[in-house]
Each structure stands twice: as C-alpha cells, then as structure tokens.
Image (cartoon, rainbow, N blue to C red; front, side, top):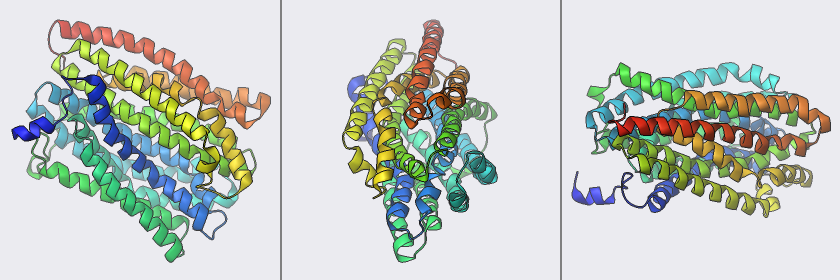
Length: 459
C-alpha cells in the first residue's frame, strides 16, 4: 500500500478518539440516512402522488415488518464489521482475507433466506398485527416485491461492514448515495409517469437495493487491501463461519427483537382510527432518521473497540466506549429536539391531512424527548459486540425490550387506552434494558482486560 494511501486511512488504534470517531461516523451517518430514505421516499411519494387512497396506509402498515427483516440483514453486516476490525487490529492479513471470503458467501445465502422468510410470513404476520382490511392487499404486494432485493441489501451490508472495519466509511456512502438518488427518481417515475402505486415504489426500492449491492461488491473485488475479494479464493473457512454466525446472527436478532416488539405496538396502534394509523406511519420516519444517525456512532464503537481489542489496547477500548456514548447521546438529544420543534413541517412531508398531522404530533411529543435515552442501551450493546459478546446482550434485549413491551401493550396500555400511554413504553423499556446492558458490559470488559493483561485476545 502506498504511503499516501496510508496517511489517508483513518487510524483506530492511535490518535484522538474524539476526532477519529467523529470522522468515522459522519460519512456513515449520511449513508444510514440514505438507507432510511429508501422506505421514507416510498411513503412520501405514495402519500403525495398516488391516486390510490389506501396506498399510504398500505405502505405504512409494512414499516415495522420491513424493519424487522432489514434489521436481520444489517445485524449480520455488523458481525462482519466486528470480526474484520479485530483481524485488522491484530495485523492478521490472512485472517482478514478469510473473513472477507467467508463473509461474502454467508451474506449472500443469508440474504436469500431472509427474502424467502419475509415473503412466506408476510400474510400471517400482517393479519396478526391487525392490519386493516383496506390496506392488506397493498401491503402484501409491497412486501413481495420489496424483498426480492434482500440479497442485494445483504451484500451491501457485508461490504459496508468490511470497509467500515478498516476506517473507510466514504465508499459505502458514495454507493448508497447513488442508490438513494436512483430510488427517489424511480419512485417519482413509476408513480407519476407510469401511474403505478404501491407496486411502483416497491420496485424502485428493489432496484436500488441491488444497485447498492453491486457497486460495493465491485469495490471489494478491486480494493488493494488484505480483504480484497478474489473469486478463485471463494470458499468457506468453517472456523470463521462459526464466528460470523455466532456474532452476526445474534446481532441481527438484537435488531429484529425491537421490531418484533414493535409488531405488538403496531397492533395497539391499529386499534385506533385510520388517521391515527397514518399519523403514526408518518411520525415513525423520525425514529428511522434519528436511530440510523445514532447507529453510525454505534458502528464506530464496535469498530474502534474491535480493532483495539485485536491490538491489545485495554485503555483505548474503554475510552472508545465513553466517546461513542457521548456522541450518540448528544446526537439523539439535538436531533430529537430539532424534530420536536418542527413537527408540523416534518409531518407535512408525508401528508396534507390536519387529522393525520395531529396524530403524528402525539407520537413525536413523546419520542423526540426520549431518543437520547436509547443511546445508553444501544451503544453499550455495540461495545459488547466489539468484545465478541452477543448472546447475553441479546437475552437482555429480549427481556427488556420485547417481553416488557408486550406486557406494557396488553397490561399497562389498556388502563388508559391513549396513544401517549402506548408510546411511553419506549423510554421506559430503554431505561430498564440500558441498566442491565451496562451492568453486563462492566463484567465483559473486566474479563477482556484480564485476558489482554496475560497475552493476546483470542480472535
């Protein structure tokens, strides 16, 4: 590698963490937001331009369901990111190559499996959620078309994990920007020019997912780094495969668990009038934006801790956690307040109905003041992932953010039956889960520090 290239590479094992984590996170923030725009532009275009009166409700009814399976795809990519970061931090070029080749094969297969599952479970799950009859057919059509692009999305998340582990978050941003612009233009073309509706925006998303996957795959095939993908070397390393599955699948499940709980919350939302359902659909887009911006810092937390764990730098591991936690808390607070004070303007992007805007404002009044709380939970989970710990954090998420939320929906919510009481379960469950996750991370970090004190980490 040329020296000029070395100077341009972001270094995770030395230098200012405050500066480097921010530099790492900013391109990834833009990348994550563009990924959110895939679905957001679908909602905005059908809400504004479709002649089908049920199109907004149909697409909106799938938001939680789509996020559930998308979370599984993203989670596997974070597993690739964590293990690749550890190999690079340890200077293990052969190991990095094995992670790249094994990770690609598993990611492609994983994407196909997710596609099949999402399509097969769509009708029973959407019916279980209480999706209104007038929205059901359109929602199913959207899901069936959208998830033909799942394998493309899996490949993109694999490539994103590989490059991010090496401190390169600009390439994923460029590729996703191209796909995001394509998605918006195709949405407008299919809906306005071709007079399509739900099927048009779903097709646009599928094409965009494949575009982002193909672009990042070409980059991995051409990059002059140890993880360059070589078709002749494509084979599974069973030891690496087990590590990827043990780390990546639970990470995906962690993401999906939140959405499983949200399925029950959506069922609670569906007990209200259609205007409340559509208002909730519009307001959920704020969650997506804020959480994905904060998620960029969580990826940084995993990458920096992973590389420093591989390099045996105990002090810097803990410092990386605190810096990432500080950034994610501040971003959640500032973004939440910004959306809170511009709620009507934000909601008007998706609908012109005063009743729908009012319903959306009710959700934002709770959520926008609570986003910062989630940083303590999610950043701690990301930190544990950098130490190869995912099983216990996943169990804690299931208990604190799934079981507790279901309890709230069926026991606490009926006591008042208001949307505000329903939405309050978010900050309450985040607080409970954060306390448990931080307690576990203290033990996990101390155990890792003892291992490093007596030698190198087992990667």
